[in-house]
Length: 192
Image (cartoon, rainbow, N blue to C red):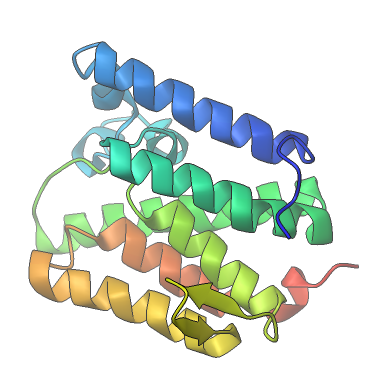
C-alpha cells in the first residue's frame, strides 16, 4: 500500500520544488534551466551552486512525472524507515558525488554539455529502496516481479545500455548516481 501524500514533509516539499522548478523552467524560455544545470565548464569557473541545483529541474514532462512518482513511491518508504534527515543526507551525498564525478570526467576526456534532472534521482531512490528492502517485491507492468539485487542490476544495466547508445558522458550523472547508490556503505543505510 502506498503512503498517504503529505505523510512526509520532505517528500512533499521535494515533489513541490521539482514540479515548481521544472514548470517555471518550461515557461520562462529556459532561463532557470540555464542557471541550474550541471554544466562542468561553468562550475570550474566558480558557479558551484550547480552541483546541487541540477536534480530539481526536469527537462520534459515525462521525466518530470516519472521523477515525482519515484520520489513519492520510493522516497516515502525511505523517509519513513530512515527518517527525513538520513534521506536528505543520502540523497545529497549521492547527487553531489554524481555531479563531481561528471565534472571530473568531462575535464579528463573533454566535452561539454549541461545536465538537468534526468534519471539520477529515480535511479538513486530505486537502488536505495532495493538495498533497504531486499525481500520486498516490485511488480513491473503487472508481469515481472523483481526484488533486491535483481532490481539493482536492472537499474544499473538500463543506465549502461543508455551509455552504450548515447555515450557515457551523456548519462554520466545517472551512471555515477547508480554506482554511488549501489556501493554506498550498507551500515550507513540501516536505521539506527
